[in-house]
Amino acid sequence: MAVMTNPLILKLERRDRLSDDEKKTLDNAFTRVRIVESDEDILREGDRPTESSLLLDGFAARYKIVSNGRRQISALHLPGDFIDLHSFLLKTMDHGVLALTTCRIATVPHATLERITDEFPHLTRMLWLNTLIDGAIHREWLTAMGRLSATAHMAHLICELYLRLSAVGRVESDTMQLPVTQAELGDTLGLSTVHVNRVLQELRKEELIRFQGDTLTILDWERLQEVGEFTSTYLSLRKEDR
Amino acid sequence: MAVMTNPLILKLERRDRLSDDEKKTLDNAFTRVRIVESDEDILREGDRPTESSLLLDGFAARYKIVSNGRRQISALHLPGDFIDLHSFLLKTMDHGVLALTTCRIATVPHATLERITDEFPHLTRMLWLNTLIDGAIHREWLTAMGRLSATAHMAHLICELYLRLSAVGRVESDTMQLPVTQAELGDTLGLSTVHVNRVLQELRKEELIRFQGDTLTILDWERLQEVGEFTSTYLSLRKEDR
DNA sequence: CGGATCATTGAGACGATTCAAATACGGTGG
DNA sequence: CCACCGTATTTGAATCGTCTCAATGATCCG
Image (tube, rainbow over all chains, first blue to last red; front, side, top):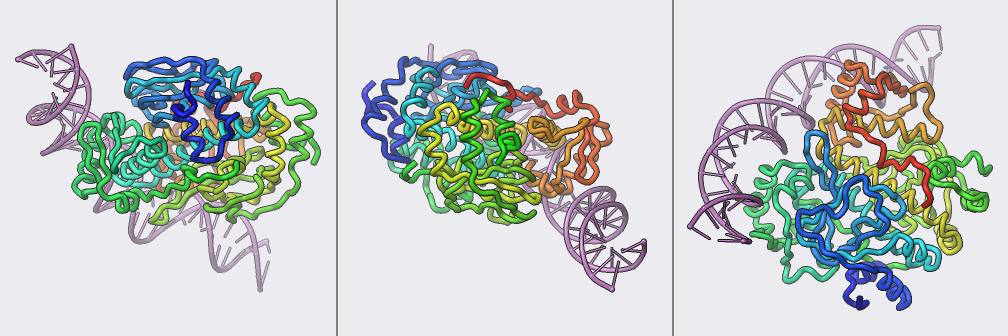
């Protein structure tokens, strides 16, 4: 794989410099690329993977199912996201991962990750950081879910996805592709599909977004952030020594 | 500090063996112990700490405040928990941390953590694991908040705290000290104080728990788990090579 | 062009909130 | 040791946000 095309490197370099050696190591770590079709499971709860998966292209979601068949999505993953780097140390998957679109995935054996932790301390910290950002996003979602209105929560999610997608070069003139159904948005926000629909209509009526098909355009970034009480600190989009 | 009294070591050894060398290193890493009184902030949002804090005794909560003054607690911390190990790499606190009781806290300089990552790969992985478990708990809370009823969510939280407290030796004959007000429980579960009260009454009426003052007793562990749809996988309470 | 999936709408029900007041509890000073 | 004060818990009633159920309309793909 050519160094420059790996979106993980793009993502990490937003947070700290990587040496050429580190980039090469990281890039060579991925041994296998596979395709998972839309609506298929990439991983299932209870799995004990021996490799971790990096999303190169497509959208994926971490989810859990509760007793009455209801589903909660606990993370949305975009190109450049490790969807189960945590399985390297957690060993057993405590949730499933679903391909929301056709996904192109590169995998790195846990044995290779172990070798990286033995030999590349700074690169290890960058991978650790990657999982810490996941955690920061979880906390932000928890706050939005517990204490924001449905509309604010939706606005918040859109702001986050907008910044995360632009960090990996997937936003053009305030527009992003968001191939996610309203039912999936509901499972993400903890809302019913019907209510998601009403909330989206409100954001459209307020002229904050346009959202037709899979194409979402931000019409008023300032006000969208206000409505969603969004500040981007938790995404750690600053370059620092780590 | 004597090795055997550090509750972090107790906690990590539940998940994997630590060598004597690692235990010594970890124990020596903590340079300072301080006391924070109940209701005081241990850390504030926006802080850029140069050391990380380990809770030796007491209860603490990570929280965020949203615009209308409402508060969401995104984590409850018990003895043995690192309350901001993530600040080592995240640098800026994206949330505050509040002492719910008088807290005894040991601190480790980030420079020391960096040295550990340079020299002790396995110990580094164990610290990383520690933050991954925080993340797993966040995901579980997200699911409970989004898709469980208020009563089930409360039951779930009680199950979790029960297991986490017993993992650090703070449970005796099904009874634990839970010095948390109903308002704080509300901020944790995303509920109003009034509703927390009603939910607790229901769990008492069903004879699942006794909860007077700070003392909570599990009366029917089996049924409490069922009501809360609780399974403990996400807490990684198994010893494995990591 | 037909079938399936997804988005939209309306109406009624329900869970949780708000506001307000009463009661219980724990710690402190006299 | 008890009276008192502040904090925490409990109760009731009205309201509100979101859900459920059910049906319709739009869109996409083969």
